[in-house]
Length: 251
Image 1 (tube, rainbow, N blue to C red):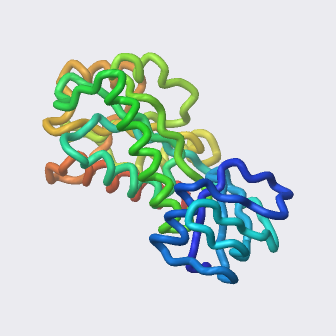
Image 2 (cartoon, rainbow, N blue to C red):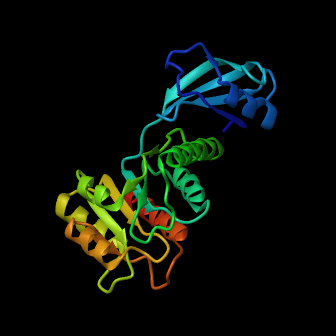
């Protein structure tokens, strides 16, 4: 993989040249020290990549000359992570690692025990920060697909709109929670194929309230064990995504 990657969401598939935004130019040339003549892979976050040569290493208006382009094949499955907002900057870490793992969609969630409360303006700034974090993670790991990061939702809104998924899962320490491997195997035995669209629901510090867990189960979410230990919310999210991605890729 080339040393340099740049985000170019507005580039066309048949572009001969790709002008970068001022922010991308600054990051590529000033921060990463890309020089004229070096190879850069531009990507649009929707699977399209362009192999390029940097022909104008301007710190505010870099231009890339396209040598070839390709459309990456999407994963055979799409995972949505609905994550109750943790405290501090932990959500930034979750977005970064979820992008590296290949999550298709991230839903920041307000639940009864969420200790983070965002008004309209602050929510907008957080959303932009998470999107920037996802872009930087995609550059670092070489993922040509950016996850969709939706606006912050309340728990009842998510439950009411959680439709059209093959599986709906919630991380749980409840007695009777079953392993992910068994859930995937049971789905495959019933439908003759692996699940393709999966929704993972992960709670905040202190987990979901008993009422929320009951609501989720009644809405078709299946409680899944992540082992006997109590995990931090960010650890639970990444563990869940990692194990689920492995199971779906090998199902």
